[in-house]
Image (cartoon, rainbow, N blue to C red; front, side, top):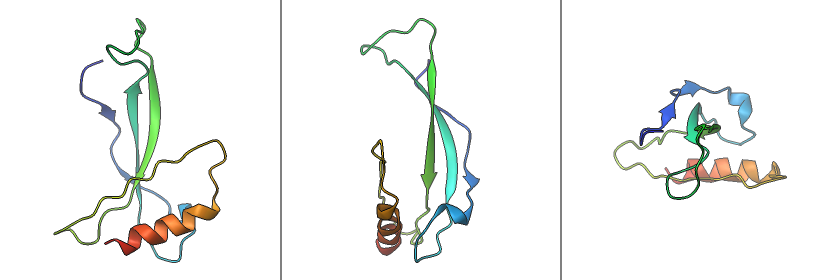
Length: 92
């Protein structure tokens, strides 16, 4: 696989995705990543793994802040989701 990641592009996500006190517009997409990377493991069949991503664009486009949230698992608590989305709205 080349150094370029395959990405299917951003598309609007349903607002019902969020359970937050602020109105957030999200965009979703899918990256296709190699299962093995050179120097780490070998995979002659070049298998891949699809990774779902979601983003919320910064409101302040002149000085946008970036916040990455990586879901752990298994058992990501949905109770933390509201706090995380409220927090991301507050850093703009």
